[in-house]
Length: 305
Image (cartoon, rainbow, N blue to C red; front, side, top):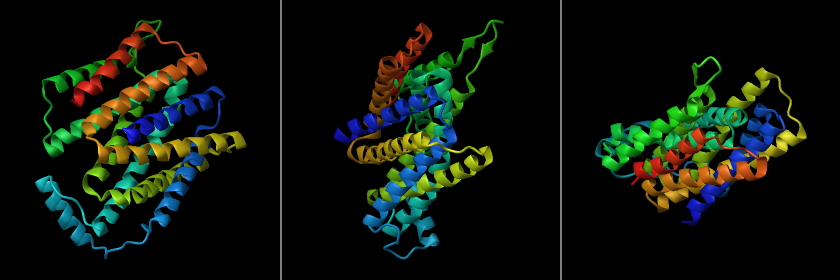
């Protein structure tokens, strides 16, 4: 349970730090870039320390494809060291893309919708890996899980419905995109852990954050934003929390069932960030939002029972 607790704390630290940056109108892209420089550097150091950058086995794409096909079809077993190295690179590249845009929409949503609703939308992303698991691994939900799915979907609709003065319904684009990108990122974490040797987690994290860094640098160049020292410092803090969150989550998934890790981290992070937003930043929770948050706390528990 220690790794689970640490995952919640580090994940909450990301949201609270983002709230601080949005409140002081700091550069989103500069913070995101500094975040990924920090996370990628830590991942590189850990990979070098463990001798993971240089493959220990002969790499063979054909061997990897054969192994992966057999494992995926039988839904059992794991990849060899050489194939795990290739899998860490492939999934890391994909995860980096999702992580970057999840972070951008996380910052944007916190500024527009507050930390509590943003945290909730991000954590409801667990619906995506759950849905994909039904298709790929035939993990059919039982009755309680179906109730949880319905609650989760209803909460997503509830937090995104805002009646404006004209009486029309307005959806929050940033919350929807945050949900989508965060959910895909969570699924990639699970995808790596399910097939690869756990020892290669640092290599996976390095490629994840290095990929996100490259895309972030390109966006920063296009936006022509220059980061101030305060932006860079905040980015370093976020980057440290970011890497540790994924590091501890992978360890927690190896120690506990995903059905325990996902609901507890989701509910724990939502509660922690909601309290932090209220205590540190004076955020108020509307009745509609409070109902949605309550539904969100129940939904992942039912989904993952």
